[in-house]
Each structure stands twice: as C-alpha cells, then as structure tokens.
Length: 362
Image (tube, rainbow, N blue to C red; front, side, top):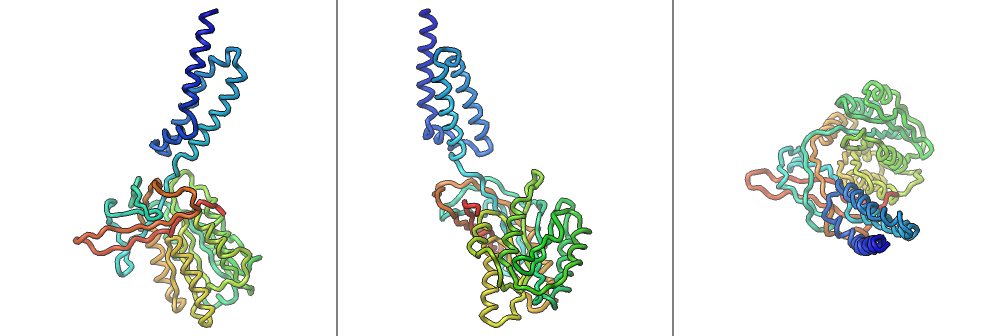
C-alpha cells in the first residue's frame, strides 16, 4: 500500500512540473525556434509524452482530475502551436533593367527583403520555371466591339504558349449580372481557344471590379495538385467600371490576401479625360499592387507585342520565401519591399513584387 501511495505521489509531482512547462507562454517560447514545417511533429511528440504520464493517473483514483487537466493542456498546446510563428510568405518577383527587359541571373545574396521596414531572412529561393494557373478575364461590353477581333488573337497567342502543366480558365463579362465562366480551369489549349473564339459583345454597363473580384476568388480556391504554382489574371477591358456590386476596397482587400498577380490591358484612350483618368487609375493599381503590370495600347495592333511581354513576365520570375520575424503580427496588412544590392559589375536592376499582404481574407 505504501508503495502505491508513493507511486501516485511521484506521478503527481512529475505532473505538476510538466504542467508548469506546458503553459501557453512556455510553449510559444519553445516553438519559436522550430521551423513551421516541423511544428506539427514537435507538438504531436509533446502530446504523446504528456499522455504517457497521464496514463498512470487515469489508472488511479484521480481519473476525472487527469481527464480535466489533459483537456486543458492539450488545448493550450494546440493554441500555442498555431500562434507561435507565422507561415512562410512566398513572393513572385520580377526583375527588370532600365528598359523593362527581364533580368534572369541575379544571385540570391543580392536580394534584400523587408516587411514593414524590417529586413527578413530569405529561407527559400528559386529561378526555376513553375507551372502557371491563370485566368483570362475579357470585357465583352459594347464599347469593346471594335477591339474584340484583336483581343481574341491576343488571347489565343497567350494560350498557345501554355506548357503541359499549365492551366487556365476564361471569363467574359459585361454587367454585374452578366459575368460568365466560358471555360472552366483546364490544361487543354484546344478548349481554351474554342472558348476565346466564341466571345461576342453585348450591351451593358461594365462591371470591371465585380469581374476581377469573382475571378480572384475563383483562382484563390484552385487546388494546385500539391505543386507550387504561379497564379495570375490577365484582364482586357476599356477600364471604366459602371455597375459593380463589390467596392474597390473589398476587391483590394481580397487581392491583398492572395499571391495573385494581375496583368491589365486597358483601352482607355477612347474616353474623355476624366473617365480615362479614373479607368487608368484602377487598372494601374490592380497591376502594381499585385506585382503584375499595366498596359495601355494606343491601338488594337499593339496587343501582339503586349501579349508577348505578358508571357515573358510570367515565365521569368524568381520565387522567394521568408518567415516574417520582428514585425507586429496583429497588423491587418504588412507592406513588402524587395530591393537588389548594387553591383558595380552588373547593370542596375529593379525588383517588382506585390505591395504586401493582408491577414484578413475578405
């Protein structure tokens, strides 16, 4: 009997020591040095060791007490594991020279990443081409009638550059109640070309914001078959938003929560100065905030050159990853800056990526 009491007392002492070690703040400190991809295994091992200790108490008269403490501590461990460190941020970075030509040979050590003004350590770096999933979002309102034949040619030109692992979908839009997915996401260039060739104009008040919002939401939900993918939208429109349900603030909040790049092509020269300025502003912000690029052709004939530039931009990018440190994780938006260190033996290069990222999904 004395031996049994001693065993329970020793287990109780060990349990009290263990409980002090697994308080939420202690766990957070312990996990802060554990890589995000290893954290789940760390926590799982912790729980298993804890269960082993509790098994002695569960077999004793302290069963209910053990169950209660077990539930509380496992809850603290799970909470701490989720909050200990942020996930890795992945950036698609374009690098160009002064003439906007792609620069594809910048070494990792030349890149500097800053989040909210604090330099970050680059954890992953690649210059390899990766599969692309993109959406063609094409304005089919009446004001695009004269440009549509050239728009179709440009869309086909982009599609024909698809590689076997690339995927795309096609959206046509007119007004807020006429936004249609003409072709669902597919790797078949034949289906995509058939979809582009079927486009036709209709009269209605353009809903550019709604079209991009819904296309962004669709693309953000795409599953990548466990592969890293670059995601982009190619928007072709005259740029004027007349009839959208979603606001610009809602659109940019959604875009800020994704890594989707927007390439906008705007035929804004056909509007009066005030309307053209408003349309140009929207299309420029869509591109620059997401690390894409805006284009404003002076004529439909410019689309051939523009489509080639978009293809080149999407294919020649760096993939850089970092785990944020030293920043306020309670902020809803984190600003990102990427710079390239000056090298006397190299031409000056400019790095372009998304403006930042939001921790609020919608």
